[in-house]
Image (cartoon, rainbow, N blue to C red; front, side):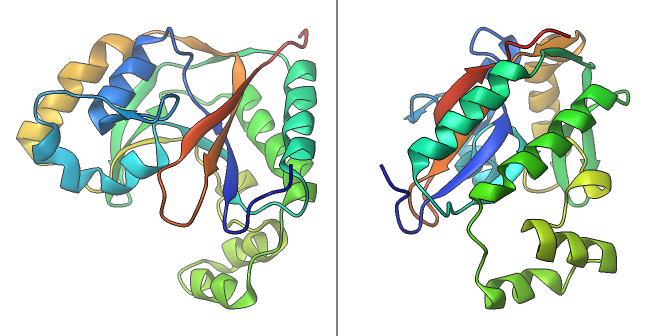
Length: 225
């Protein structure tokens, strides 16, 4: 099967389906990317305007940013499965809620060299599948970038990679009002205090521009440390 015109594919970290963090994230954003179905939770309508973009992308952390493919989807998925099979699971530090850059997200509470290396590898290894973006679109994105980020954007199709990448799981497109922030903390706090394993690599799919991203494949990390 060939890649659809207009479709994009991304490599994401997403918590395992059995993880309370996955359930909390889907409930908070009101959508389960694995099923494509809405998740009902009190207060959803009130916070929906604050989470619209995060909801469309689904609960995740970006490893390789959304990209159009330059070849068959099957070849890309085969390479993802092979990469995952040769990659070892590793521990992700406890996460904490942060407000920075005008949005609200989860970030690791401590550095994680294994996570940085995994993200760097995802960027490098799968760039062979990336269709170069339209030059005009690249120029539009570059105006708000630093010189370093511009260089990364032109080489890798995304400005926030390698030393410019910071693992985060977006919870809201803005800083939240205190009452909604309190609801978020009550929902997420039970799941945040413990370490969890990064045990799989996920492919998310945007079938057409502006459509919600869905979980297309979850590939287990099966390598040995």
